[in-house]
Amino acid sequence: MSWRVRVVHTTGYRYRSPVVQSYNEVRVTPRSDRKQNVVVSRVETTPATRQYRYVDYWGTAVTSFDLHAPHTQLKVVGSSVVETSGEVEPIRTGTWADLRADNLVDRYTELLEPTAYTPRDRELGAVARTLRKGKTPAEAVLEASQWVHQQLKYQSGTTGVHSSAVDSYQAKEGVCQDFAHVTLVLLRAMGIPARYVSGYLHTKPGGELKETVRGESHAWIEAWTGGWWGYDPTNAIPIGPRHIWVALGRDYADVAPLKGIYSGGDATALEVTVDITRLA
Image 1 (tube, rainbow, N blue to C red):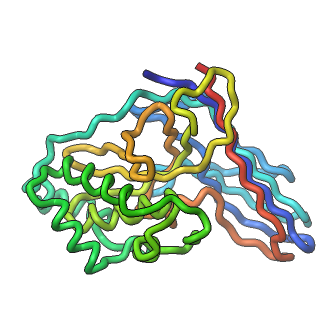
Image 2: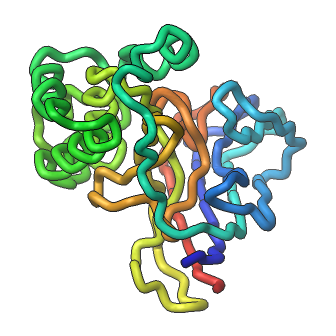
């Protein structure tokens, strides 16, 4: 069952004293593929800026802009209407022998290696070996995702934006970013290419038409087991019509919704809201 949804992602900064230069990159624009179709999308800023759009190395749509007029506030609004598809089924054609093939390892080596957010860990490596035993690659992806869902408690405030998978695993708590990072550590330890996906999640499974809900930025994983497919370890559910994907990468560092540098006063407030409306 497909949905048509409108997403409005608003980020606002206030500065203690005027900012005189600001350079930014925004990753809030969904892309069309076999799982979703983007009907319309735009990024607006206040103050108004001249924008440059490109697609980055990982296939994410990026809007970059700079601002040189003194300003004490900056507001960025990404608005999109997207048609999403039904639940994504695991791709089960890949075998462990396929995953060990030199050409595949070479092609996806960046998605098999550790990162600052997804470092190698002896304990998680042992868990990965146990979860993999007797499973096909696709079954191992589901097993790892569901194990992480059971091990971690969803709790904001325990971890921060810079916390690694090991930090959240030791705390046994975290948010969707942490659930995704721990799952990636397990999958890569198994030899399964896996990537981080950022996007949005409509918070009501039976969302009423025309009802606007306070949604959330969300993160899940995609794994290659003969082809790419996704799973949501935070909620232990397949990717479905409530998921809207925006960015891909090795970990959160590759997909941050807004990042940049500026010269001026400290930021004194940060406002982030995501409003999602099911249109059809």
